[in-house]
Image (cartoon, rainbow, N blue to C red; front, side, top):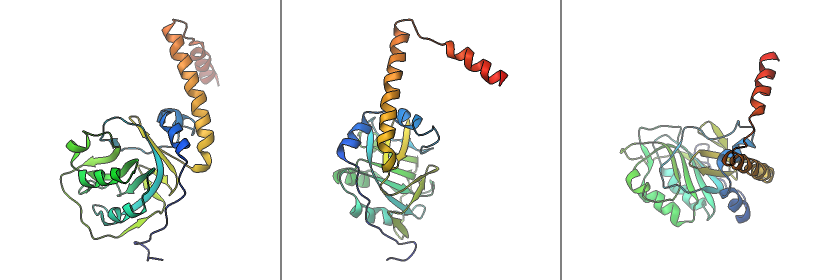
Length: 222
């Protein structure tokens, strides 16, 4: 085993294509609501043309502003993965730009989630390959290490474990444990149908808001 700071572990089992396809059909907000509204990656922004993202997490923890471990992590990525990078939220050096994002896409990676800075956003914004990051800087990275691959990481205040299923859309990002994904999908589908019915009732002028007064009375009178 490599020493602490340079550890590497094999990538976790991948989610099935059917599971990933189902997740891409569901809004992240619906998925989040079925995870107690308490989960989610915070503070990262999409820098790509809108496109839903879902894939199995390959994780990287790297020294702030250094991308040697990210280059190495490409060797662990398979089609259907999402590369999740814990750069400590540091924005002084970009961890990657257009070349590395393009290479990740060529591997079949489904997206990049970077708790750090990127650059070349003009080019990245022209494509729909998902790239989420905390910020932007023109200053490039160092390549000295250390870094660890397929270890638990913290990205945007959420712990992401190797093999978690990472989903993203214009509202944000979420990581789902493989053992929870079927129940989360089922709940999100049920809620999606409920919300569609609510929108239909609005369009038809019969939207029921009686619950507001009942809920307010309950909260005020405890």
